[in-house]
Length: 95
Image (tube, rainbow, N blue to C red; front, side, top):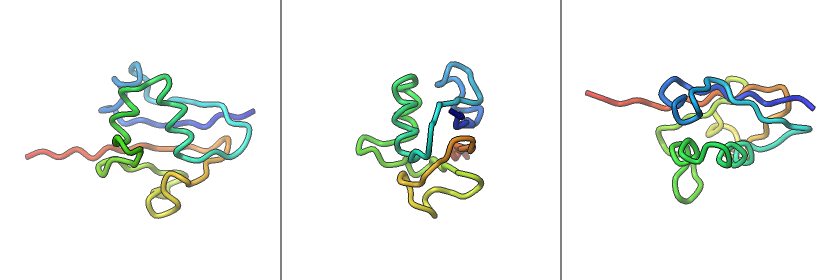
């Protein structure tokens, strides 16, 4: 069984115990939604930062699977295979 790696930006790392990469085991393809659900059990504050109360991705959160933004694919239904990398980017605004 291989792992799926989830890469977090520095702004989200404190919500995941200071980790920059989270791994979750996968014995086959899973969806991005399933992956986020599995992370939510260990990191509920991180989960709330990524998804709203309806379960949708927050507008300022971008998730990439193999370099492709999931909103341009199948959204939370985008499949991630074991061994692939998921990158989460949170937009930061300021002025």
